[in-house]
Length: 546
Image (cartoon, rainbow, N blue to C red; front, side, top):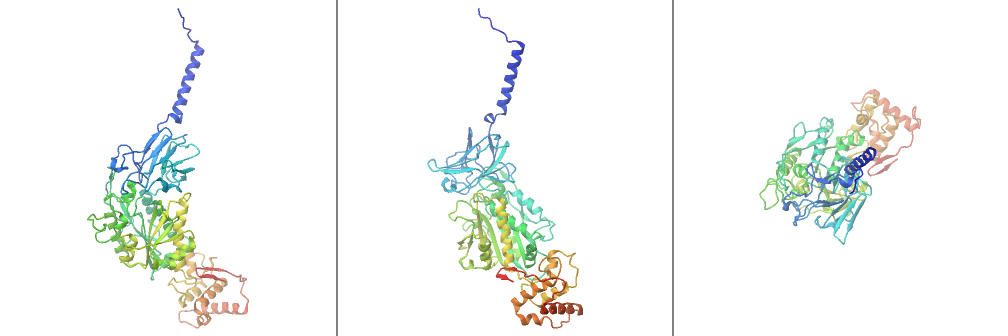
């Protein structure tokens, strides 16, 4: 007979403790965590089990998780069995190193991702590129992963830098109340011009109508003739970095930067930030939700706003197009439609420009600021927004600007790219010394200059000080500003024209004439009062003035 030996109380306690600790370790271990995938949020997109087969690829393969390998399949809407956009949330990933893979159902094949890097974020605000992004030609797969484990339980992963619909809502709300931002003729006080139609998306979700925004940016204190510029974005649902670029431009236009303040006196900008809000919210590859088989950038043909041969009006595009017509009275100078592109044969950001417009001063100045940009020939045959700009809004320059999802170029790069568009328009319009912003340097600017010489400028804004002759932004209209004004005026009009400014004019007071005469006398005799004149260099788009 075998007698079993009962554990002592101490032994039993130790055994129980060991079991408990082991159980806790196993429960906490990432190896035991269930990884789940989800894309049911603003701009999210992934083909998951339960979706209709037709919404994925033609083989009915869904995204899946096996161990630490995540196989991704995107939603096929519009791209004939292939997809271009994924944005999803993976949960249960804390402490895990996951290997993600994409197959040849990516648009035109995984090989087109050979120079690409996927991005991830823990908060949907700060994005990082994956450490390892490589193409496995033998298996026809694109593989990406990080060297270190994830440090939070949830991570967001995307093909490129997302720009959800809600960001447009929040960014636009932040502009309400700006002294430089007003509703367009077709908008309300919240900068809304109407709503999208909504509908049912390709995986059966009800997508409700959403606000469509537009607004005008200019300095209302400047009431003279101004250039009209239309800015559009978000026509294609998945082209998100185009919106980052447009946001950077708008941020500059409403900023306190003196360059932006001067530009607001020369131009008014009509901004339509997201022409396809339903498609963006639903995470579509390209199209609207209302009509899933029409390219919205082939439907800018009023009054039908659809592709030729189709009878389905794209109500999102129609709302934006009609507002553009009424807001601008179909008379504009420039239109830029900000897009993005994937797996393109052109290796950098580029503009689709008509050959006859490629020498336009604006585009040449863009290339001078952004020397890696490329110019591509446009035809404006299809009914794109750029064609709409030329043929309907009568723009003198209308173009599509394509930003690429370029590896290691993060949101700051696109925001800066947008700002450089704004600075370029300043380069084109700005006339140094043009204090009344009428586009030329003449006698009226001299009157503005000498009127500022009588005043304490400390209480004025920087742009107001500029209009009163503070050309070097030191807070006063001094003899140094006079030297600069004289140089600019002589260069623009000649020495005789500058001398003619000193003939008596009815509007000038005795004090201003006396002051001008004293300044001129001091310069002629080389004895500037109280301050030593230093050599100054003036930046000017057409060269350098000393």
